[in-house]
Length: 120
Image (cartoon, helix red, strand yellow):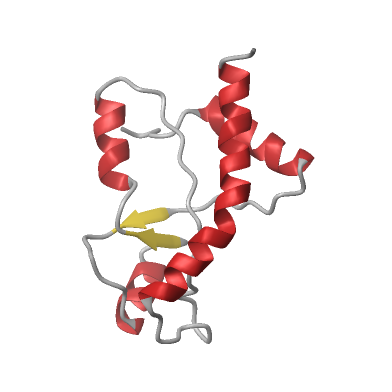
């Protein structure tokens, strides 16, 4: 599973984001067990091992999909910052609010990818 995400889908997503002026970044996503929010010490550890983003889902689902022979693509919304100087006590409501704000742009990218896969 050295290349979990389908390169063509990544290229399309980056192209769509550029065309629609949607901010998008690529990085290393680390999956952790949940449900819990990370402590400042956990954020420091995750940065040391190379994480750009951390979450409680995506990784298990991607592993199953790849091992099932599926072409996989994923987007993640960054809902709170775990970088030095930005760590603050976060509540689930804050996470949900940030995710809801990111949802329209994420939906647009996914819809456009589906349109490329299944043109009308």
